[in-house]
Image 1 (cartoon, rainbow, N blue to C red):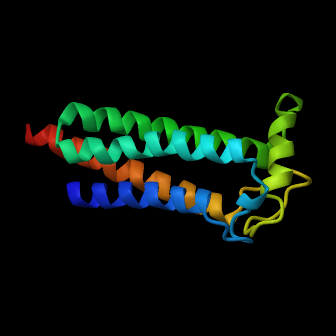
Image 2 (image 1 turned 90 degrees about the vertical axis):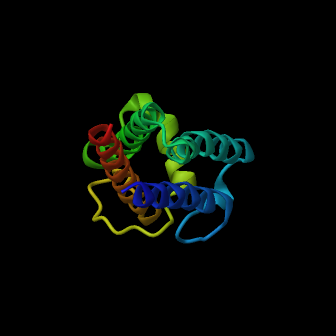
Amino acid sequence: MWTIALIFNILHLAYHQVTTNFDLFPFNNIRHYKKSERIAEVAVNAVTMGFPVLALLTHRHGCIGAACFVLGFLLAGEFLTWWPCYFFGVPKALKRWREVYDRTHRHTVMILPPIKDHPAPNLEHCMLQALSLATFVVTVGCYVRLETAV
């Protein structure tokens, strides 16, 4: 289980870094990100997605538990960023988010049916969220296995 968790965490980190650093239009649209936005996203997610890789490499139960927390927090953030806006529309308080979406995601590959004028998660982010969920599940599974082995 440890090997599977490590592989998923490495894939998770690599997928995010590739889709944030390389222009794969129409899959992604990083050409319309501001340089500061891209640098911030690369840096923050390198740390948050890289920590679980390092935690698994330590084989320390407490570190892997912390990694599960980080991955759960990251997954919650991904889902809360996309799905409420897709199903219910963008609240006025998130006007800036809508502007960023229109600039960076509107013209990428979409697989979900439109709901009114609500912003839909694009294929790139649907795949990221599926990978985030799978990574979280296998990492928690690794943590639980280590717990029962102790």
